[in-house]
Length: 207
Image (cartoon, rainbow, N blue to C red; front, top):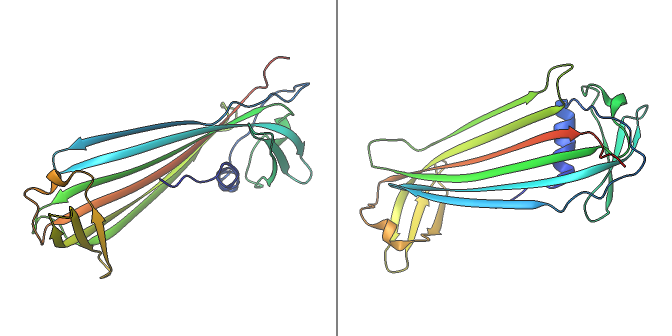
């Protein structure tokens, strides 16, 4: 699954207006390595695969006048990002504060019998940030649902050919060929891709 990079995610969230707040620190801590959690589940006629990647970066330096923050990752790499003017409480961010970013992705599919659905594309997005004075936090997410028509089935190879709502075709291989039992040409597959990112800022550890 594709995961947005730590720094790209931070820049996007900053432009959306994240509220930062923290306290002072004498030393910059070494952030923990990223963690990855993956899960999958099968349902009648469908299934879901999910992944959450959590990364932590430490504030190495901050320039309030230029609205830039330099962050240090767990590998020691330094990256500087510009913070949007919409961000509140930037002057409260101090060297050593920890920024935690959680990236979530999921792909879900569901078989729809012919006549019960129509090919198409739907998209939705949402974003929230903490109110003034609350603990710093922000979250945003988006989802795209594509309903495609099954135009071919190769049960020997375990593959299915899908035609999208715009007429493009793609061949996909079933992870479990037995799941193709009962599937017919003309049926539809509803595929939903979702992604979300959440950010929080923690006070620097006591030195």
